[in-house]
Amino acid sequence: MDGLTVSTVGQYDLIYNAFSFGIATFAAATLFFWFGLARVSQEYRTAIVITGLVTFIAFYHYFRIFESWQSAYEVSDGAVELTGVAFNEAYRYVDWLLTVPLLLIELILVMRLSQSETVRRSVTLGGAAALMILLGYPGEVSEGIGGSRLLWGVLSMIPFLYIVYSLFSGLSDAIARQPANVRHLVSAARSLTVVVWFFYPIVYFAPFVLPMDGGTAKATIEVGYTLADIFAKAGFGLLIFTIAVRKSEAGH
Image 1 (cartoon, rainbow, N blue to C red):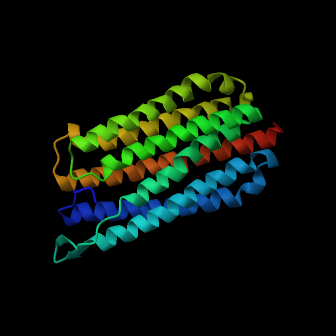
Image 2 (tube, helix red, strand yellow):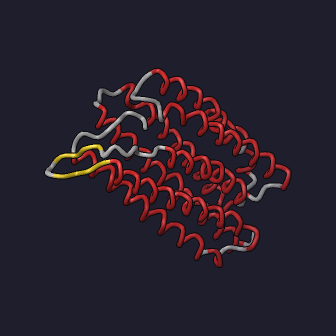
Image 3 (cartoon, rainbow, N blue to C red):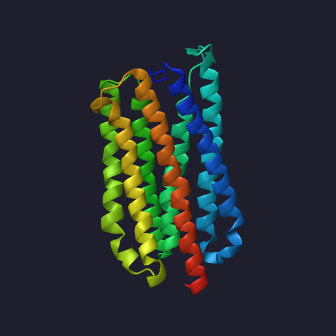
């Protein structure tokens, strides 16, 4: 447990409703992607299967996060109290450890690069993404907002910045080689990844730069991460699906 707890019913309900919205979004997105497989040609179906897998993994973990949140607090008579059962932060990081590398891989797959380039970029970017998550976890579960959270957060930024650099410098030529009818969408998918992913460290470091008590910090972190996940997984997935459909229709 990270030592941060909500102190008001409003904070509890805000997080509760955010988790509930996340569950519904990821469940709907998974069904949409998998039932839409017939709309894309064979060479892009792996990318769409992975897109649905990302949202399915997120759906499962948000359901477990939701259960853990309910178990950790008891609300009665207008007050919220701890039950003694720890809120499990590990669910979110296990989700990220599985889904963040897959998000990068689905972008690479839908670009339909050469096999050697696909493997190389998937391994390097996926590995950097996994390292980023592993380095961020100790800081997330450290007690309160202190030096340990700051240290591990800074360390996790190293692979994060490498990923951002690779997306903009390493994929520019590959994006330029994309068919004209999807080139702007592939570029938008890359930009969305970078913009939304920058929101995660903003949320992570927000308690250091903004004056807030423990309950406000907890609400900011949980709601912020949830919104970022929705855009990074379901929103990004819609772009990937649209790219695959347009390429399939054009016969690319």
